[in-house]
Length: 430
Ligand SMILES: Cc1cc2nc3c(=O)[nH]c(=O)nc-3n(C[C@H](O)[C@H](O)[C@H](O)COP(=O)(O)OP(=O)(O)OC[C@H]3O[C@@H](n4cnc5c(N)ncnc54)[C@H](O)[C@@H]3O)c2cc1C
Image 1 (spheres, rainbow, N blue to C red):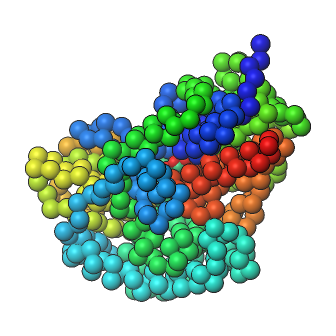
Image 2: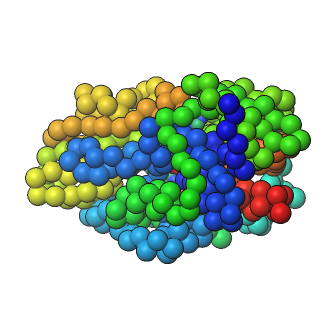
């Protein structure tokens, strides 16, 4: 027998849960089908190394309007890691030490020159592909544009490392326009962009946000329910799960990350642009590692370069007995976040005085339900695919942080996209 409902939401990440909350709040019957045995998708608070760690998305900021509205709505407390008291970076093989302000001054000329044209290219970050001058630069990678600056080597390496931290991808794969999008969202200020993307986090973890959204509304939420097939026509869609169950709905919301959307068997097939975007994949293929070291230490920040398996590391928790660092690298094939020896060796790029006790992380690239970390478009994907990726196809609607307009690739973007599809569907069904 085929179960019937008004809306099926495929995916119980932030975007899917927001869509479900909004639609069920408008009186529609909503069923969320989530493949994993937990909700949250690419946000995941897990207890490891003696702390509640964010294995996926972490930081948010008051300049991210959709995420911040959720913080206000649920009264969530926001905190930050310890302020870095020292900074390390590399000039060739030589390790430089100083404070974070010195490092910021070092990268400032490169950042300014690289991002100088931000507001001309993207005058409306909420419509990133609409600017008249965006197509001229969408074919470049951020590496192409960094190379054009011809910076002195110390500045060049430092800028590279900062961008690896943002892109979580080899810089030759990441679109220059992705850097412009982030910076346009903070009205052209690279300092604010930097702060918005990597300082403030939820004190009770993203799990508090996920459970608050899931509990708000009366959607029927089912975990461990993977969707395999969707057949759609003018009246609705039939969804088949991996277990062979069939559900029918008037509308379906798909929230799958770009890299796996094309794996769903959809009939009639999705448009050529959506399929091409999946085939090309996003640029993001990096790694996030958590590292417990013997304490006490002075909280620090360290940047190497794109050549190193870990380009950025910093102290996120600090105690008397131990400290927990978080690190990012461009390519998950170059280092596993669970390989203690490899992580130890990578840290020695800056410091050989740290006693690494344990490491942890998740291989998001190998995870069949994501196969990417946070969205980082490749050159030309913004102008070729962005509009089509968001466009409904008959009764199918598309949400997800990957297809958000303002803070794509962020928790904010996931919320924004969930709100958008809920509005599209309720307008449609009214
Ligand atoms: C390591 C890492 C660090 C990050 N850091 C930050 C950060 O600091 N700040 C920030 O704002 N953002 C960050 N992000 C990005 C942020 O987490 C994501 O943009 C956001 O969570 C995406 O939400 P979503 O709902 O669009 O997608 P997802 O969370 O990917 O949700 C999609 C859901 O669909 C499910 N699914 C997939 N296939 C199927 C199927 N066939 N059937 C049923 N369900 C399916 C998945 O299991 C998943 O739960 C980070 C992400 C990662 C991975």
